[in-house]
Image (tube, rainbow, N blue to C red; front, side, top):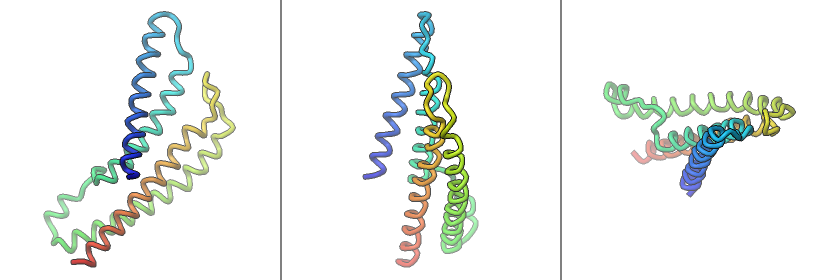
Length: 150
């Protein structure tokens, strides 16, 4: 269910950024530019990228270990996948620490004409990394259960 919510929210963000860019382009061509459109498009795009990365990870489309799977036994490939997931979780936890610090650091800064706190853009990293950690932990649990079943 969460995946469907993320996918719907991502679709909404994509439509919003496309419409915003289209309206801003037409407005600029007519001589009355929307001065805050670039900042809002950046904000929406940052959130869209993080949601898309999590959705890709949920579908195992972020990258693959197919070459390794073809060279080694199925049991070894499963162990490598589990190790890979643990490394990714560790890397994401490392990134989360610095993303949180960056978000806090950017809060007092205002972005361009929109005058919104820059932390709203940087919060996309924190939320996206948390979503990816959740995804990777669930994949780790699923793979461990599959190993035990075999």
